[in-house]
Image (cartoon, rainbow, N blue to C red):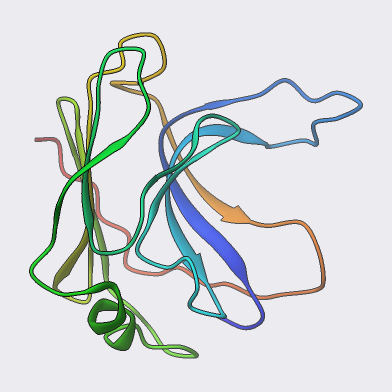
Length: 149
């Protein structure tokens, strides 16, 4: 990963291309990954509600409500940031089961969202790999495994 703002989309939908939306743009949950290590480990909803769980948080989203932090994970946001390998391979697990999305990075749980917002949540959808618009950048993914839970 080099000068990158990226992410892994899950339970997403592809938006129709148009004047304000480029080809291959997706809306949905995203496990954030970025070179500056500012957002890596967070759960974000691309083209939707925005930040759902920051690194180190367990968050509950009530029906038609705003995300509420219900707890902090065992490691602090700064401790979790230290486990992220910049300019190296990282292992990412995303567990999407029922209304819960959990991101695990290099063996540490970095964020959890329980999304009971029936109007906005997605219980199924596409998987995608983001290359953010902007300056030239590079991101690579390998050894991708899917497991139905």
